[in-house]
Length: 268
Image 1: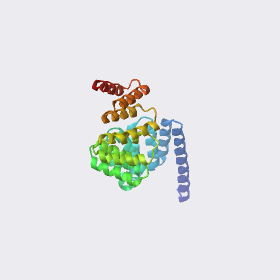
Image 2 (image 1 turned 180 degrees about the horizontal axis):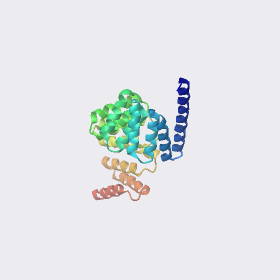
Image 3 (image 1 turned 60 degrees about the vertical axis):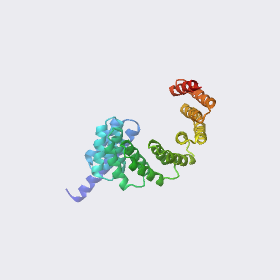
Image 4 (image 1 turned 120 degrees about the horizontal axis):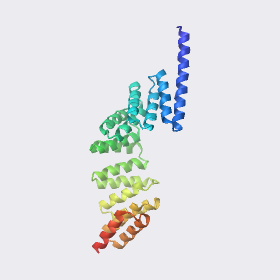
């Protein structure tokens, strides 16, 4: 075979691989994940060393419910290119959601070493570290995420939750204050700020935070329950009762609201 003939064959293969890849993507977008996987496999038969094809196959297999095949595909992508970050990310998620947290930490730690400016990666890694009880490492990862996106409420909120879980209530208050000051549209950071403030006895600030949470989501019965508890701890049973009753209007079967009302009546 001449060099010219080899070039022609390689060019035809490239076109065929590209066409198969695009067809697999189209099938996946239509929800035909099994068909997409078969198409990516056909492309890999022509070019087994293309990491993006292995990654696409992993996504298709994962969407099809075959976690083992998805893991193999992601690992093949990383064999072809150890720095293929989409495969590291997806492999880590797959491992984490399969309760193989230590393996997920290893995968994400390696990715974070070469991609230190990825805020979401640091948060994911921190969540995994917390679940393994490696709190100091987790705090370092959450704080790295905060430094990367100081104007985004999410990493501040995640750091606050970690502080709250560790009993670092004053630090949690500060983290949630920063999150809330960035005016997120959802109510979670305000509920969290309320919980943290209640723990350190800042009842007025806690109640304001719960009211902000309710303003963002008027149907959140749990926010009303937290507001009622804060009033009760501060010594305002009538306000507490009104908040619990509002929670029951929103969620008549809410066991916590009923329990708090019974305890409130028993204490009077």
